[in-house]
Length: 504
Image 1 (spheres, helix red, strand yellow):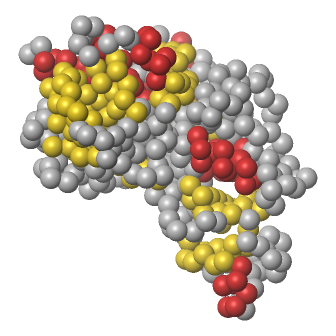
Image 2: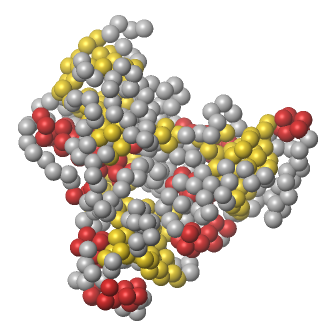
Image 3: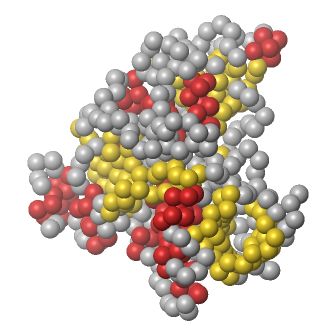
């Protein structure tokens, strides 16, 4: 073990994902004469590029993996240290890294993201997809696979089952519909036909540079929409930052079969048991008959039994069952207040319960009284917003200046892409927290668009827009203004009326 060397820095940020990098960049620009230390366990960092403000609250951007030197060249007062965190002593305002360095800080921001919640950790046939390395391992295994099972119903699972070709996919979801985190059952039904349809040709190849630590030639990066945004300090084997939006762009997700795109969904089920080939043979079980000829008695490397009684043999299983806030190794010896979802509780200044320790991104849980139109969903957009706002709050505290909660926390808004459709989510898009006190208006054109608005007492509370609807800015304004729309009734979604003319 290397001898401990102590260093002092006004600002230390832990995490090389979007929240951490955004926080470090903002601090560096506000305090150009002060050093900002960014600790990251991964050799590459995540940077926001091609940022575009779509509307008042909607943001669109790319995420790129870059060497830390790119950040240091852009901000000369940023010092990136590649090392996991070993221990935090919050009362003493110091932390130690695995490499033996000790940092004394004035203000600390924890942006350590989330770690995958695999349903089993000790099975070589179960793969979690989180960072670049695991995405490459998935691509390698898929190239030889004829059938895989995907377990999960979040952003990565949605992207995965759609992008995989040349391989049969069994998709096990615990809900009644796909994409339960993002959609209602109606939107799910709109998207389902895309699962087994021919995909549209890609307009242009990905041209973003991908950096590797092995000197390989640059290729396009896997980049998820799911929001875990940083590395996992102090956890062996989990050093990579989470994948970014469009993580599957530029990598070929093709199996060993000639079939193009074949997906079978098993609803309302979870994993009951996983068998090796030997265990399966010894148990003398055979796959249960399905409504479709998807199971067989052939030999597979692994078998999965679902809670609905069905058993499928496959080449490997993908666990895409979400993440849990990565609070290790910060809790030991400290008095952090932890939320029910295991995140570090933060107030409306992004402060944790420990003095001068802030948190942003997936590792934290927003515990202020939220706007009636906002909720936390661990997504890339919120990781960027929280990292930026945490830096502003740290600066305000150092300068003893007042600061109010940023406008981005006034309305939940998110723009992404699923199954080649643009998807915009606004406000209480799934009527979150509204109980039965709401009504829905829906417009659907098969294969083109799906529009849903959530109304309460005549006022728009949320919306789901799938396809090129061009309604996002108008609906955002209607939600923010809380205008009484009762007089318009179902005409609000009449496709023959230009709704913008009503509400300019």
